[in-house]
Image (cartoon, rainbow, N blue to C red; front, side, top):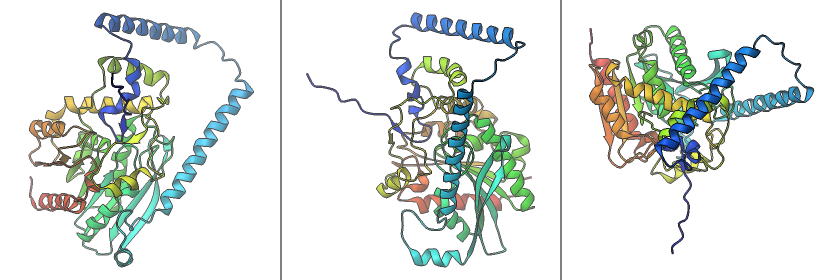
Length: 399
């Protein structure tokens, strides 16, 4: 008999593996009746726990032991030190030098023709979020593109895209989410994607106040695409935008088993930062360019550890919300997706395009392309498609 060799789940962004973090939970369940009994049992325990908390809420809390205080202090200090280390790395990134192509003359020439800055922005809960900007020296700025990166990556990866936008007189801003890149928070942990949505709206408002009258676009990749789409669903944000661009958006993400969707909310409350060892070991193929894959998965600012339960649940939650509300989308948008994407579903992008009521909407599917479109061998052509769409949108008069 042949022996089957187990293959590890591959990881990157918000894939269908997203909740392979929960996959071991359902292997021992064989019938619908067993699942129902388990759910009833879990709900009973949870209700007893809540009832116990209500009864105890007026009792004086016992003083914390010195050892527990020390553990909290050392853990907090460990996270803070990691943030300082990551922020220093983010500052050191040569934002105009490609990590894939080496052309020193090009970089030196472009440095003379653009202005690059990094700064901190105060997000939800007063978290310091690391941000970047790239602007051409020209005074004639056509518009501004605000980049919201995908899960586990960071804004510095989009320097080449920013350079191409600058060459067409578009200014660029980018923001690292909480727990990503040079921003505050435990690396790779997202306590709430609603907070990321709120931070995106606040960042947009700041940019508009700094550049009054300049048209603004939001760009989001993968889970960042889901964040951008949800942010643009709020009228007060949509009215500030000329349009949004989504590459490989995390839409219609589904759990690996129905039981996962049922227990994920509870587990995300009880043990939000718990990691399932072995769920995320190697990077999923997200580009057909081997150099781009090496650059991504050797980047110390790209999180490659196991996904935390709360993060996975948050992706399921925002994806489910967006999928139920495709018909309510009215913002002008351009969605791009590779037909061979194994991380997010290109058919969900097609459904968004078909169902949205936006008057100015476009979809482009790239045959055989993978997840990280702006890191595919044809990255410059894809970036040009995005630039052409923004130029076309700016030229269209809409009442």
